Amino acid sequence: MGLENMLSRLDAASEEDVEELLRNFNAENMQTFTFDPKEEKLRSRLCQSVLTVLGREVPPTCQKTCLETLRILSRDKRVPTPVANRDGMLILGEMAKLWTEEEEEEEEEENKQQSSEGKALTEEQQRVVVEALKCLCNVVYNSPTAQQVSVDVRLAHGLCASLHSARTWDHEVGLFTLRLLFLLSALRSDLRGVLRSEWQAVGLLTEVLEHTLGLRWVGPYEAAPPDPQPLPAEDNERAMEALKALFNLTLSETGAEEEEHQFRRIAAILRHLLMLRTETEEKTEEAHSHAVNLLNNLPVSCLDVLIDVPVQGGFEKYGGKNMDAVQVLIDFMEKRIDKGSNYKEGLTPVLSLLTEGSRHHREIRRFIKAQVLPPLKDVKIRPEIGTTTRNKLVRLMTHVDMGVKQTAAEFLFVLCKESVDNLLKYTGYGNAAGLLVARGLLAGGRGETQYSEDEDSDTEEYKSAKPFINPITGHVEEPMPNPIEEMTEEQKEIEAQKLVYMFDRLSRKNVIRPMVVRPDGTLAPFEETFRDPLEDNSGSNSD
Image 1 (cartoon, rainbow, N blue to C red):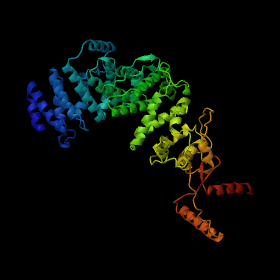
Image 2 (spheres, helix red, strand yellow):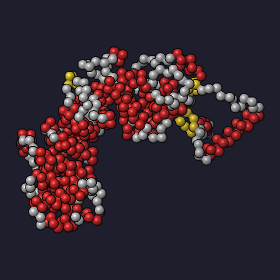
Image 3 (cartoon, rainbow, N blue to C red):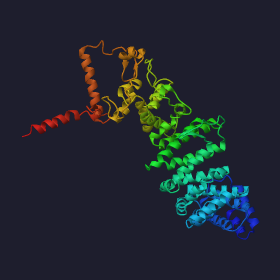
Image 4 (cartoon, helix red, strand yellow):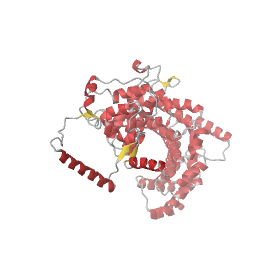
């Protein structure tokens, strides 16, 4: 049935006929995600008609059907105006049991909360709430106008109020409540500070995670080991939405003292999440990915929570610290490397996390280095060739993506305690050149971070092979024949002149630019090393 024909019938239809017409429309368009621009006005009229029906007292079955129609129409990138304006958003908020009216008084909100907690919704009413939340997700995602209206009517406040009753949520109600909060916090950065400071959203989401993951605390920042049974799929879905919302809200720190406790609590929850498994390996990896992203937002001082679990105990070799969570992160890193694609989004977050953890926590660095950069024995193979974690990371040091290259190099540099000599031992000068140029360390030396004085011991195999290692490639090369060995002195001079000529020609055409290393370890154009002293001398000898 065409939209125009349907609209003409809707105007004169009874309540039962309206529901039947909309039900047929929904069935026909359940899989429709693109819309004809020529029918935009007709879709707006349909939206307005549906909102008019929702504004009347109609049974839940009719409300659900109307909301399904709005959900389908709100998939359009050009969301019909009636559903994205103030009146439309207020109706959807009311259907979703969210308190959106800014005129509401504090005591009225409290009364509503008490009544909603004390009165369970029927199954039909829950379906209405779910459909309304789905509509709001679509509208907010697709319409900047609706995003502004959401701020004006304090939709996020209603969502935070709903978080108080998270323990009694139906799965889909909870899922789409959290998803809507994630969308608002992602699309409206100006809301994040209000959500954190005024409506305590971080604390509320933390409680949602605790409940959803079934956490049991055995210490201030230590949870009991997770259940060996996989986390149910529905619980995992809600936990992922909560993590995404928390990620948005922790993108910037306020520096408040009370946040230190909150962040350490979150770090402990994330450790628990790293140690549990879900129903599929794919979902477990997704959960770990969200945990890594959120850990990157926390102050690096909180990362000790990952290894400091007194009740469970740890390794005496690492000062009694428990390295199980760090091992999970290493395994996760290797999986992402082995995928061979999407390194920027998939790999760099975990590399950054392990880098900062190693830079500021000695035990974490020692544990990771023992696996990633074990003492060298076989130095006959180039460091970028092979299947070890070290080989894979060294290959990434020359990756085409600058961000991936820099992150991988920085990780290895920190594992070497930011010592140029140690780094070159494991990577070779050629692979490390990009990092050394960026750091101004071409002349050698160390980075700025101070590390413990414990020294790494070389193996006997490495010590015996060290004099024969090519510092550029980082391995022992097979002896090569000397190409000029049988040349006369005159032939050598001719070849040298050819080489100078070729370099000069390439330099003049700006194909290459000869550079030299300054005393401070940075690069300078070759010609400057001759021009600068002359300029200084000419100034001092002037009359």
